[in-house]
View 1 (cartoon, rainbow, N blue to C red):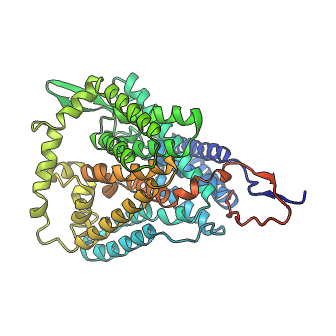
View 2 (view 1 turned 180 degrees about the vertical axis):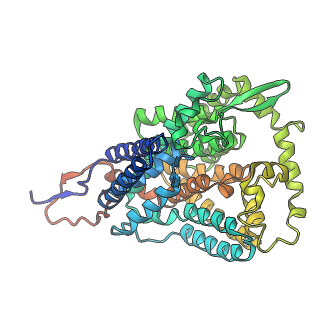
View 3 (view 1 turned 30 degrees about the horizontal axis):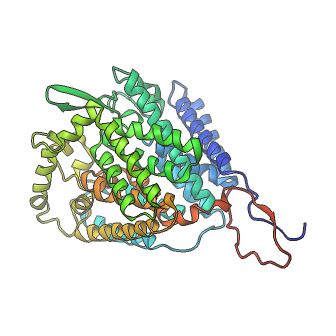
Length: 483
């Protein structure tokens, strides 16, 4: 019909999310088959079948690969493909393959991309000077794979990147819900062995999910589940909560955000909990809101805080944070005091990506290196690497502030979330530096922050087929979509 414009005809975002979830679950099943008691010929058959299927999906519908990575990262970030390696690293390479074998949908370069590229370059210069063996190179390569995920994500169409964000949030809800189930009903902490085919609960690594903190004479269990460590759980769930609020709609948003928030709270991760609190304060101060909406957010936040403090374990955890007798607080203070002496003779190129304290848990505990992301970046890569990382964070904060000055409260959630994460989580914790999965999670956060104004356009959520006046010019050019 003349005068009709159809702006979108590809499949709904929900279909892409579902496909990604199914692909991730299929990868788990393949891992289970490969990790069983099958003989060499059966293992080879499974491996070849999985490889062929993966190549076919990557070439025909790469959005499924993008969503699969996001789901695995949000739900089971430490899953391993038997005989291959960490699932997220394999899927990250598949994402690159999907982007490079299809037309690029987004060509504009963001300042965050430039700063990340510069960070990789100066880090390369650092590792060439500090590497004392193959382990240094191997750790650096893993870090580069995780960090560089930002680049293919920035080339995706707005719809595909939205799928990535939504699927990560779904994964965080699934992972957080499953981890909360283990917290409630797995008193021995061994039920995680159900996921042993994909590397969880394997003898010699992490055989139990039980982690505690001491409150006086009482040991209080913290949520870990598929995130292995409670502080890591807090970081992964923080991004999941941010994306659930910013990208989901209606009752799905309410349920997913509630599940993730409860799991985050039960992790008792102070860095994640305080990041949320600071993000809410920043949101209230800078986001453009009506007086009624601002009062509603303030009231809801006050009720949530009151409810959290009514839980004895949460109350004890938060109150102990300001007590000089708290073990975690004293360890952080000792590590900070030891930072300058530990850097003597290593200021320019750091102590190296493969330093023993980064790859050996016992050595890391004995060294007690600084639990601060910018300072640990300097500790590992040297002063120049640390300065470039600080520039990256500065650009991110400016981008986040601009998001909050828009009329979209969802954009404000992303901006406030990044600022809260930067001001608290990155100052009190370090997995973003030392753990490839956490680094990759941060790359997704940066991509969503840089592209979020595009992701909020309602026209991309539905197929529009509306009549327009004859002779009218439609200026919007649909982006290329994958899948």
